[in-house]
Length: 567
Image (cartoon, rainbow, N blue to C red; front, side, top):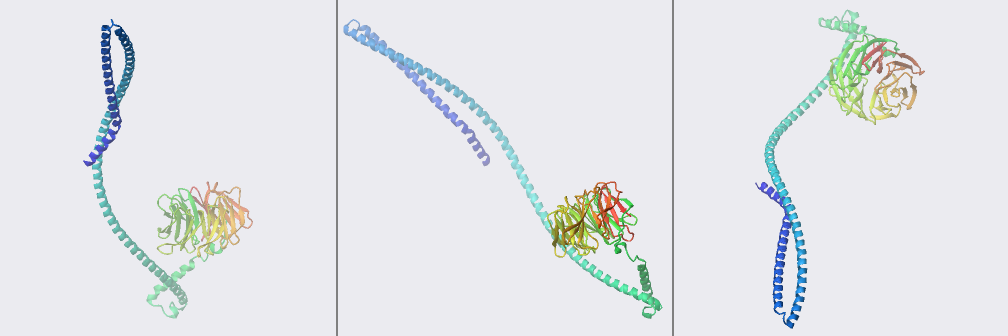
């Protein structure tokens, strides 16, 4: 109630203030009218007194007209009367003028008063409306206060609920941290056990190899080792060892990659619809097995058998984020893409074993180190990261930072050095062991570098492909361009279009981004040796592998997801 009383007092103060000058002006006008009326009454009394005086003087003159003194007196009185009449006339004129002026002033004052009365009436109506508004606002204020009290009660309830949830969250966080610690501890123990098991397996393999050699030696001495007769329990062991030995003897003695022979592509062996959406990359197995892997914007990596073109495995990244890069080696398959992570799968179990997270932008390229124990990734966040995946818990070991987006990378099998191609048209080389940048060649290609590759069997020559539709071979020792390759029909239209050396380093090949033709140049002469047509749209990826056991070496993939294995 005190708040309401204060509000009413403030309202009265606001509404009374405009009326104060009106009331004071009205009082002044009333006083002025009273003064003028009193003055008119005084002038009327003076007029009546002068009329009476004139009548008395006239009577006195009539009584004294017969005597000379009386005549003189009469003349004097007439003159005096004339003066009085003149004065009276002047007074009457003056009074009339003053009366007219007073009448005009009175009329003006009446008009002003009428206007002020109208203003007062309007202000009273406005005050009435304001009172109604104030009553409405007061009711709304009361409703707001009740709603505020209700909201305060609800807020108190929510605070209690939040407090209880925070307490539960703290307990869950503590439990989660404890579980994480226990999980990490268990994984470390498991990793240690696996390492011990690997050491044990290596030891057993060595012993088995030794036993196989002993078994071979014992074949010529009556079936026993060192000339002794075989016991019953040793017969099965000897049979198994002999079987393993015979199995080993039937395996191929060498593979295509061991002799670094190059098979020139001439015609398609297998044409495969690998992906339903745009493809982005193709890679041969780095361990020289008969497998080739592809990546696509349909968020999948697929592995095909180069012997028959059959699909061997499909790995999904989940979601709809496209995959940009892929690499394969032994049992390991890697795929990176726009979700800022790189996934590592095991080909035998078909399960993801690592999801490498750390980049802040999309990952544009991925390569496996020889031995498949390390991975290097390049990203649009202008960093290159090296990951150790040899254990069950991956670790990031090295980060290379630079000034441009990485489009491609490659690892030298001889020196373990890394070369990267960038959007600014330059290439950079990195020493993984020291973390230093050992080469920087900016503006090598106009529009950016789309692929880089170390020359097989050579630790200092690099093949690059650029958006300027040229291929170049670089000598990393002299920072010089050795040779440039170009053809009017060849165009590079993708930031990740790949090119490749042949296994013997004598040729290079790349696919054109407009018509899909495959171009093969001779490294020594720089001449175009072959131009092959099979794709119906632009090629985005080309790989030239070592041939595995069947000699199939060249694979290309186009924008529509069609994979061609060439023979």
